[in-house]
Image (spheres, helix red, strand yellow):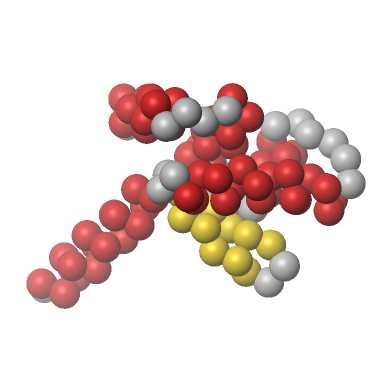
Length: 99
């Protein structure tokens, strides 16, 4: 599993992401589903809630545009999870349909 994560991180680097965005990507892979304020807390970022949320939503949208994560708006916040989970969910649904 660690090799798989390393390959994803290499893919993220090859897509020319900033180091801050790469850190956000690592946190999303380690603890999902996750929202921007949880990422800020994990990374030790302090500040006003609104500005922290906006700062990390920027990185979430950037990763979503690159196809590395999935993003969904729930209420007043966004929730992110790795794209690989979508693939696993689809496979699971296909297998459940075969039974």
